[in-house]
Amino acid sequence: EAGVTQFPSHSVIEKGQTVTLRCDPISGHDNLYWYRRVMGKEIKFLLHFVKESKQDESGMPNNRFLAERTGGTYSTLKVQPAELEDSGVYFCASSQDLGAMETQYFGPGTRLLVL
Amino acid sequence: RKEVEQDPGPFNVPEGATVAFNCTYSNSASQSFFWYRQDCRKEPKLLMSVYSSGNEDGRFTAQLNRASQYISLLIRDSKLSDSATYLCAERYSSASKIIFGSGTRLSIRP
Image (spheres, helix red, strand yellow):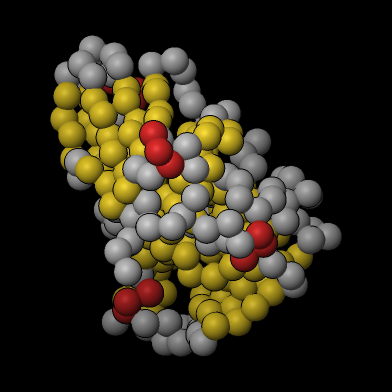
């Protein structure tokens, strides 16, 4: 079974540019999460989709970040315009809703560097 | 104060040793707890889930102390391949965000 995949694996952009990250969850997983780890800090939650609906977006840093999950399959996270502090590793995770037994499976991450 | 606190280490122990990590959490209502393992430049991978007082999986034992709000991870007979960063995490309820600690770095030497 294929795991969570993310594209691109790395992205280097200049401040002010736009970047779009993509996440393909494990097939059949309704829950999709975005997390971010900036250098020297812990992994922090950004938002949570259930199918195509945003269940919790309390971790989104500001309105420069836009996440979508059209059709409830893959998700995109767009940063526009990117700032230096957006640099970090962006992880996507997916899960089936199994109640207390839910396990989130993480993708390999996208390493974003804003210069 | 961080919601999940861990000693960052690094812990440097000889192969075959037993090593233990502790992690404290601040939200007494949290339902589930986890230990993830993260190798350098890789994604976190679930090592153990801790739903009740604790559980054991081979050389790994996780324990939960709700009264003192901490969880621990014990690794027995450590192997070189156990070298990694170990992330403690909590979740308030099912199908919700995971809150991670900063991680504890472990290095096993021959």
